[in-house]
Length: 285
Image: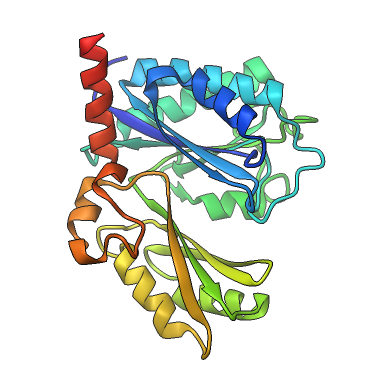
């Protein structure tokens, strides 16, 4: 397989045992670009990137290791999940062409079903010409939707996987003090819309508005932050923000530098920069 670089922000249902997260990251080798660990969500996001062929090999190893090391039974965390490897998205880097991402999506899903017995649900453009979103998979899995590959019932310890092909998005959390769980859910519904998926969560004395910005060139972190701030009832206040994983260069360029720190953004959190650094290291070795 040849073609442009592709990235995958793999969502794994482990965010408290850092030794296991480190072991999973090591499986990614030099394709590992970033690791984001969240103990409250009990979830980690491992971002890998590279040429399509080498990325597929690395992801097969990562999924195999996660199935060996993790057990969904007894797992508890703030974030919804239905598998030890919960979501595997494929995203083209520097291109709008999804063809390479779609090929990797389908190949990984077929392999995971056949080799590991993990039922996989596809999202993104579908073979019938339609489109399926990740929220649709979460709502319908094993109820209104049957797996696209693999068994028709969840793996006993590994559950299921959502495997998708999509354009870049930004996963982003806004932490708020002075907000109840019901109020957090109201805020999430209020800001939800085209380009913004949001859920309201509560951990201890803090609430979190957890978002996926699916059109980050139009609705980026700064716009999202301002929307949350405008929707808050008094005396609730934003205490911090959190970028989950990496951000496309074009999104960072659209945010005034003076706001980067408050929005948890930096030049070091750019996907294309991490990929370029990885290729430079590879050439030198």
